[in-house]
Image (cartoon, rainbow over all chains, first blue to last red; front, side, top):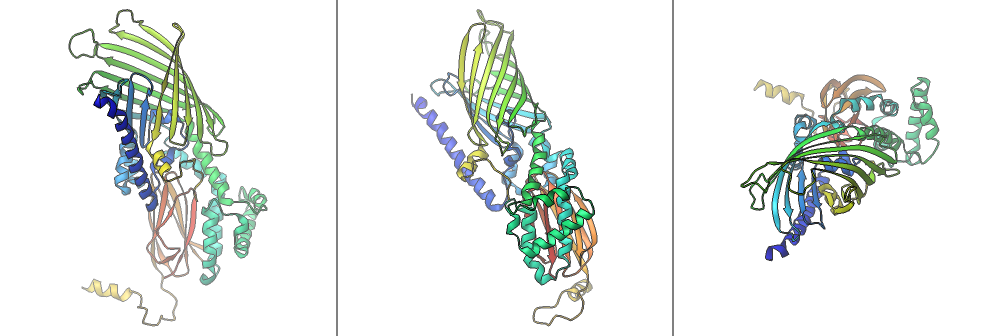
Length: 414
Length: 115
């Protein structure tokens, strides 16, 4: 009874502690000027993050049902980075790609009375992770071939060269404007010093005579005093980046579930998942293929002693319909439709159906980038049964951001 | 011992002594670029009176030394990054000062050599 009463409060307490501690660490990081790793996948959908997390994820499943579970997923590289900033350097970032592609999970299963009913431990490895644009040579090449980014480089060099003809004492007054023009996504053209603008316009004239692509477009845009040059350039970068968000991700994993006594191997699960976008992710409406397969080796309770003699195969092919924000292109609502095929290969119980097919629907409401509430509905067309699961999934950077008061979607930084 | 003496000889004069009225002697300046949580590429250019004196491309970070740099020159650095930030460092007194961190991509800035 005592345990029954305290368990939900313990979970709540741990969540609040995690929120607080990660919020603190986020504050520390921001003070150091180091951004957290999850900024790299702010455009990722909830179903993507359910398959593979890049930092921490806390998932509470089947909140209202008889078999509740609390699972903590983590990326070991992200944990190492939290404790050693120097690992952020590309040399180490590349070296530890295998660690970045790894997810470790621990969880606790609870019964309807929130009593401990066993624990889980598992690992997932991203065999193919084409969404990790941070190490894709192709992405860097695409950036270098981008005509807007190329123009940006040429203009920044030519303006800097022009500034070196100005005496050092006067040059210093232009330096601030130079930095803002080429790095600040809030700096309006009208706000720059007129002498500095004259230098930039002379350089644009020169580039125009050299027939540098994009010069005529910039000449038109610059007529608007509200024009923000860096915003245009950064948008082009973000657009190139978002194209990577519909690429394929293939994972494989293994999870072991313990008995209520804590002894492991009551259920061994081998899983694989594949997700790939079908439409351009910058569109407001995006579709993803989401296929999951699992083989469960479970304890056959009809047989004496501990064993893994019951084998169940599950295949869940589905489609995720993702609604993206109009300007941010970040997902805020998802509807997943899938079919489930379950086949008890071995250890069929009496009166149990060997093959069960269900139609599933999951609605994910993304409260912030990293906090979402998935509501899952399953329908068994043969028996006409409908059953639902209410889950809550959060990423810890999301919690950290909430503590820092910047949980809403992030635009280009300046 | 001899090494120590020669190092002292090349050191600039202290503030108490008047600066000599001769053209500054060119000395090397090393630019170091590092990328955090992703790859990147940067181009470092030494400009003097509007002319390109030297140029180097640093893929995924690294350093380059311009052998003849004088006060008043500008070391320009521009690049793209795929991770969270890029840090630029120059082993000379510059305006703006370095190391400078850029969290957006692409990035560009010019660093005027002061001494």
